[in-house]
Length: 236
Image (cartoon, rainbow, N blue to C red; front, side, top):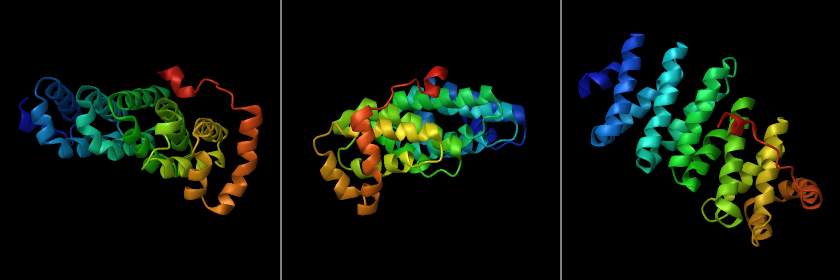
Protein backbone atom coordinates (compact mmCIF):
# COMPACT_ATOMS: atom_id res chain seq x y z
CA UNK A 1 0.00 0.00 0.00
CA UNK A 2 1.45 3.39 -0.92
CA UNK A 3 1.59 6.34 1.41
CA UNK A 4 -1.46 8.32 0.15
CA UNK A 5 -3.63 5.19 0.23
CA UNK A 6 -2.57 4.34 3.76
CA UNK A 7 -3.56 7.76 5.06
CA UNK A 8 -6.78 7.77 3.08
CA UNK A 9 -7.79 4.39 4.49
CA UNK A 10 -7.59 5.68 8.04
CA UNK A 11 -10.92 7.31 7.18
CA UNK A 12 -12.33 4.23 5.45
CA UNK A 13 -15.60 2.67 6.57
CA UNK A 14 -14.08 -0.81 6.05
CA UNK A 15 -12.69 -2.34 9.24
CA UNK A 16 -9.86 -4.26 7.57
CA UNK A 17 -8.79 -1.20 5.60
CA UNK A 18 -8.52 0.87 8.81
CA UNK A 19 -6.46 -1.83 10.53
CA UNK A 20 -4.14 -2.21 7.53
CA UNK A 21 -3.74 1.57 7.31
CA UNK A 22 -2.60 1.75 10.93
CA UNK A 23 -0.17 -1.10 10.33
CA UNK A 24 1.29 0.85 7.39
CA UNK A 25 1.60 3.99 9.55
CA UNK A 26 3.73 2.06 12.05
CA UNK A 27 5.94 0.69 9.25
CA UNK A 28 6.36 4.17 7.79
CA UNK A 29 7.27 5.59 11.21
CA UNK A 30 10.01 2.97 11.52
CA UNK A 31 11.49 3.20 8.04
CA UNK A 32 10.33 6.54 6.58
CA UNK A 33 9.71 8.86 9.56
CA UNK A 34 9.76 11.97 7.33
CA UNK A 35 6.57 10.75 5.64
CA UNK A 36 4.85 10.51 9.00
CA UNK A 37 6.16 13.87 10.24
CA UNK A 38 4.84 15.60 7.11
CA UNK A 39 1.35 14.26 7.81
CA UNK A 40 1.48 13.84 11.58
CA UNK A 41 -1.52 15.99 12.53
CA UNK A 42 -3.84 14.14 10.13
CA UNK A 43 -2.49 10.78 11.26
CA UNK A 44 -2.74 11.44 15.00
CA UNK A 45 -6.24 12.93 14.76
CA UNK A 46 -7.43 10.00 12.63
CA UNK A 47 -5.92 7.36 14.94
CA UNK A 48 -7.25 9.08 18.08
CA UNK A 49 -10.72 9.04 16.52
CA UNK A 50 -10.39 5.28 15.97
CA UNK A 51 -9.64 4.78 19.68
CA UNK A 52 -13.36 5.53 20.14
CA UNK A 53 -14.40 3.03 17.44
CA UNK A 54 -17.18 0.65 18.56
CA UNK A 55 -15.34 -2.24 16.88
CA UNK A 56 -12.89 -3.29 19.55
CA UNK A 57 -10.44 -4.77 17.05
CA UNK A 58 -10.12 -1.36 15.37
CA UNK A 59 -10.00 0.53 18.68
CA UNK A 60 -7.35 -1.85 20.02
CA UNK A 61 -5.23 -1.40 16.89
CA UNK A 62 -5.51 2.38 17.28
CA UNK A 63 -4.39 2.18 20.91
CA UNK A 64 -1.38 0.07 19.91
CA UNK A 65 -0.56 2.40 17.01
CA UNK A 66 -0.39 5.46 19.28
CA UNK A 67 1.95 3.67 21.67
CA UNK A 68 4.24 2.49 18.89
CA UNK A 69 4.31 5.92 17.24
CA UNK A 70 5.67 7.43 20.44
CA UNK A 71 8.05 4.53 21.03
CA UNK A 72 9.49 5.05 17.53
CA UNK A 73 9.34 8.84 17.19
CA UNK A 74 9.45 9.92 20.84
CA UNK A 75 9.98 13.63 21.42
CA UNK A 76 9.07 14.50 17.83
CA UNK A 77 5.43 13.94 18.83
CA UNK A 78 5.46 15.85 22.11
CA UNK A 79 3.30 18.66 20.71
CA UNK A 80 0.48 16.11 20.28
CA UNK A 81 0.65 14.76 23.85
CA UNK A 82 -2.60 16.27 25.13
CA UNK A 83 -4.61 14.97 22.19
CA UNK A 84 -3.21 11.44 22.48
CA UNK A 85 -3.24 11.16 26.27
CA UNK A 86 -6.78 12.56 26.34
CA UNK A 87 -7.96 9.84 23.94
CA UNK A 88 -6.20 7.06 25.87
CA UNK A 89 -7.41 8.26 29.27
CA UNK A 90 -10.97 8.25 27.96
CA UNK A 91 -10.40 4.69 26.73
CA UNK A 92 -9.00 3.63 30.10
CA UNK A 93 -12.32 4.62 31.68
CA UNK A 94 -13.96 1.59 30.05
CA UNK A 95 -12.77 -1.50 31.91
CA UNK A 96 -15.43 -3.92 30.73
CA UNK A 97 -12.86 -5.58 28.45
CA UNK A 98 -9.70 -6.09 30.50
CA UNK A 99 -7.54 -6.97 27.49
CA UNK A 100 -8.12 -3.58 25.88
CA UNK A 101 -7.61 -1.79 29.19
CA UNK A 102 -4.21 -3.49 29.44
CA UNK A 103 -3.34 -2.38 25.90
CA UNK A 104 -4.23 1.20 26.83
CA UNK A 105 -2.02 1.18 29.91
CA UNK A 106 0.89 -0.34 27.98
CA UNK A 107 0.61 2.37 25.33
CA UNK A 108 0.55 5.07 28.02
CA UNK A 109 3.73 3.59 29.48
CA UNK A 110 5.37 3.72 26.04
CA UNK A 111 4.41 7.38 25.76
CA UNK A 112 5.67 8.19 29.27
CA UNK A 113 8.99 6.41 28.65
CA UNK A 114 9.57 8.10 25.27
CA UNK A 115 8.85 11.74 26.08
CA UNK A 116 10.04 14.53 28.39
CA UNK A 117 8.67 13.94 31.89
CA UNK A 118 7.45 17.48 32.63
CA UNK A 119 5.62 17.78 29.28
CA UNK A 120 3.97 14.40 29.79
CA UNK A 121 2.99 15.36 33.34
CA UNK A 122 1.32 18.53 32.07
CA UNK A 123 -0.64 16.53 29.50
CA UNK A 124 -1.86 14.10 32.19
CA UNK A 125 -2.83 17.02 34.43
CA UNK A 126 -4.74 18.92 31.74
CA UNK A 127 -6.53 15.82 30.44
CA UNK A 128 -6.96 13.78 33.62
CA UNK A 129 -7.12 15.91 36.77
CA UNK A 130 -10.77 16.89 36.26
CA UNK A 131 -11.82 14.02 34.02
CA UNK A 132 -15.52 13.22 34.63
CA UNK A 133 -14.84 9.47 34.58
CA UNK A 134 -13.62 8.10 37.93
CA UNK A 135 -11.59 5.30 36.32
CA UNK A 136 -9.89 7.73 33.93
CA UNK A 137 -8.89 9.95 36.88
CA UNK A 138 -7.46 6.90 38.63
CA UNK A 139 -5.32 6.13 35.58
CA UNK A 140 -4.10 9.73 35.32
CA UNK A 141 -3.35 9.86 39.05
CA UNK A 142 -1.23 6.72 38.96
CA UNK A 143 0.86 7.94 36.03
CA UNK A 144 1.29 11.31 37.73
CA UNK A 145 2.64 9.59 40.84
CA UNK A 146 5.25 7.84 38.69
CA UNK A 147 6.12 11.08 36.89
CA UNK A 148 6.32 13.03 40.17
CA UNK A 149 8.68 10.46 41.66
CA UNK A 150 10.70 10.45 38.44
CA UNK A 151 11.01 14.25 38.43
CA UNK A 152 11.78 14.45 42.14
CA UNK A 153 10.88 17.14 44.64
CA UNK A 154 12.81 19.92 42.90
CA UNK A 155 11.85 19.40 39.23
CA UNK A 156 8.24 18.50 39.95
CA UNK A 157 7.75 21.92 41.54
CA UNK A 158 9.90 23.88 39.09
CA UNK A 159 8.31 26.65 37.05
CA UNK A 160 6.01 26.44 35.10
CA UNK A 161 4.99 23.02 36.44
CA UNK A 162 4.65 23.86 40.13
CA UNK A 163 1.20 25.47 40.13
CA UNK A 164 -0.31 22.74 37.95
CA UNK A 165 1.20 19.97 40.07
CA UNK A 166 0.05 21.42 43.40
CA UNK A 167 -3.49 22.11 42.21
CA UNK A 168 -3.75 18.66 40.63
CA UNK A 169 -2.50 16.82 43.73
CA UNK A 170 -4.96 18.84 45.81
CA UNK A 171 -7.84 17.73 43.59
CA UNK A 172 -6.66 14.15 43.92
CA UNK A 173 -6.48 14.05 47.74
CA UNK A 174 -10.14 15.09 47.93
CA UNK A 175 -11.33 12.75 45.16
CA UNK A 176 -14.15 10.23 45.67
CA UNK A 177 -11.80 7.39 44.67
CA UNK A 178 -9.57 5.90 47.38
CA UNK A 179 -6.90 5.07 44.79
CA UNK A 180 -6.85 8.63 43.46
CA UNK A 181 -6.66 10.04 47.02
CA UNK A 182 -3.73 7.72 47.73
CA UNK A 183 -1.96 8.95 44.59
CA UNK A 184 -2.50 12.58 45.61
CA UNK A 185 -0.93 11.88 49.01
CA UNK A 186 2.07 10.22 47.38
CA UNK A 187 2.56 13.28 45.20
CA UNK A 188 2.48 15.56 48.26
CA UNK A 189 4.95 13.27 50.02
CA UNK A 190 7.43 14.06 47.24
CA UNK A 191 6.58 17.78 47.19
CA UNK A 192 7.19 18.15 50.93
CA UNK A 193 10.88 17.40 50.40
CA UNK A 194 11.21 20.60 48.40
CA UNK A 195 12.52 23.40 50.64
CA UNK A 196 10.26 25.88 48.82
CA UNK A 197 7.15 23.74 49.30
CA UNK A 198 5.38 25.99 51.83
CA UNK A 199 6.12 29.13 49.83
CA UNK A 200 4.87 27.55 46.59
CA UNK A 201 1.79 26.18 48.35
CA UNK A 202 0.86 29.65 49.58
CA UNK A 203 1.59 31.12 46.16
CA UNK A 204 -0.56 28.73 44.10
CA UNK A 205 -3.33 27.53 46.42
CA UNK A 206 -6.21 29.48 47.95
CA UNK A 207 -6.31 30.06 51.72
CA UNK A 208 -9.36 27.81 52.23
CA UNK A 209 -7.71 25.05 50.26
CA UNK A 210 -4.54 25.29 52.34
CA UNK A 211 -6.60 25.05 55.53
CA UNK A 212 -8.41 21.96 54.24
CA UNK A 213 -5.08 20.41 53.27
CA UNK A 214 -3.48 20.98 56.66
CA UNK A 215 -4.78 17.80 58.30
CA UNK A 216 -3.83 15.63 55.33
CA UNK A 217 -0.31 17.08 55.21
CA UNK A 218 0.02 16.51 58.96
CA UNK A 219 -0.93 12.85 58.49
CA UNK A 220 1.65 12.51 55.72
CA UNK A 221 4.26 14.07 58.02
CA UNK A 222 3.52 11.81 60.99
CA UNK A 223 2.45 8.54 59.36
CA UNK A 224 3.86 8.78 55.87
CA UNK A 225 2.16 7.23 52.82
CA UNK A 226 2.39 3.52 52.06
CA UNK A 227 4.38 2.76 48.92
CA UNK A 228 1.94 0.09 47.86
CA UNK A 229 2.13 -1.27 44.32
CA UNK A 230 0.12 0.76 41.85
CA UNK A 231 -2.31 -1.35 39.78
CA UNK A 232 -0.88 -0.03 36.50
CA UNK A 233 2.58 -1.37 37.46
CA UNK A 234 1.16 -4.89 37.47
CA UNK A 235 0.20 -4.40 33.81
CA UNK A 236 3.58 -2.89 32.99
